[in-house]
Length: 586
Image (cartoon, rainbow, N blue to C red; front, side):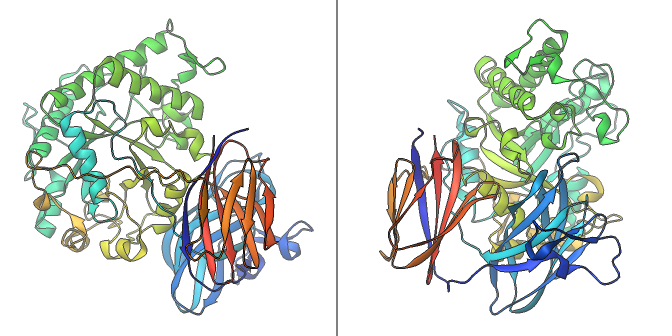
């Protein structure tokens, strides 16, 4: 039997009301013949909607402007693939809803936080990947859950610069958003691969010319540091210039970030994409040729393992040059793995996690790299935690978000922020690690979408182009908002003083409401409830799946024996109050 710890209780005052339930069959758009209403005895109301290639639009009227959580009851046969649909609130893109495969109808948290305005609103589920069988959506009042963040980075014995960098990120989280952009070409094409600076780098110059401000965070890539042709002069010049410019950024008071589009370690083809991505060329490199998933052991005699180690050591040596120069950086490896369009994700979650941990071990324990702040890129799917390396290996959790079909949309993406926060239990800083349009600061502040930083991709994602994801006008607005930190706001790393921030960890075993109206106690795996009257108890996992819902009266006991090891959220609603608390089962 595991131990159960309750993290915290949040008290929210609102009138107790049943969730707002909206049947999918009532959201079918007129003349949309791409969807199909299917009669089913197991569906709410006797039918569900097979969305196929169509869209749905729900209408709901609320008495006051406020925030809500959106739930979705759906079915998606397991002989297919997971799906994503776009979410629009009152015609404005508000993020995405991820649907994992299930042969039976189940309820998931589709969006942790959406804003509805007084009067009639529309909620659109718009085809992205399509083919979801939707029964209904449900709206409940949004209840904020707390963050519990570590005051120190995960790297043991971090360098002074790494301590300063992590402290800076932590101290500004929920107070400011850090400006950033990805770079495409870090050097001049003069035959000498001379590193550029802020004034000559294309994306940086465009943003400065538009706004009069420079970004803090500059993104680089070890794109040409390994793989086929990496020994050629131009490729080596690209890597050298990236490292030199990273030093320039740090010395100017900014923050460098490195990604790694890791090309085929066997050097058979110059590619990192898989065949399923639809890109050419593609690689068929498989981690399983180097890793025994069943026995959880590396095949140390295999050529594939030796190639992986060679590449890891080579990248570590490059990063050591930055450590020796006193530079710390954001390190974002094995990004977008769950998408499986890169080889490091093509074999599934377990081999990818093993590769990440191998990298951490080689970098930290063997190469003595202590200047990295580790960033893990997640999605919002039901299996997101399967891909997660673990709290002891990750400092920041990032979400890569692009609008598809591509468009300029500067909404806050609060739904995605809240979902990522909840998946990881509020234990990690959350950031927009890669994106198209930059959310407008006033939208982020208003919605509580506290992304630590933003990082639009280079080229026409960062500058005016055919889709105008970001243009001069939008950069002027973003960079001159007081919520946005720019390079001009930075004190310089030699002057930065570490702020004392205690760990946000709470391990109370018994908690009571602030008004002493309701109290809770865990006795083994039994939840004891003392309430002034009727209350509704709902238990969710961190993917938003509703595990249990029960109405109880006064003193009651609920058996939690069937909960597996993991983390859950309990919500207790009564007349005029709502309590949420997070449970850890170890």
